[in-house]
Length: 140
Image (tube, rainbow, N blue to C red):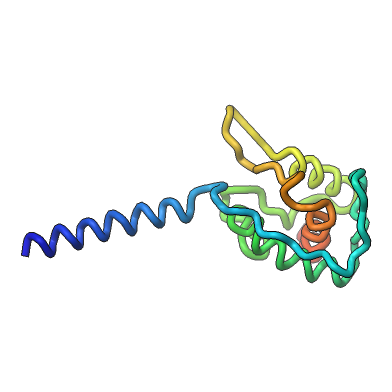
C-alpha cells in the first residue's frame, strides 16, 4: 500500500512539474508561417502594413497568431491579463508602428523578457499577416 501511495505521489509531482513547464511564459518554439501567395517584402521593414485587407494574409495571420501568439495574448487576441489585449491596438500607421517595434525588439523590463524578439525568427511577411488578422478583431 505504501509503495502504491509513493508511486501515485511521484506521478502527481511529475504531472505538476510537466504542467508548470508547459504553461511557462516564453517556452514555446516559434512555429513557421507559410506565406506562399503573398508578395515578398524584402529586407527593409515596411512602415505600414502592406497586407492590410488582404484576404490571404488575414487567413495566414489567423493561423500564425494561434500558433505563435495566442499562448500569451489569448485566443482571439482576448488577453487573460498576462500580455496586452491586442484587440485594442490603434488603427492604421500608429498601431503598425507599435506592432513593428514590439515584434522586432520585444519587451524587457527589469531584466525580464515580457515579449520575445521575433525579428529573425519569423519573417516580416509572417509578422505582417498577424497584424492583418489583428485588424479584423479590433475593438474600440
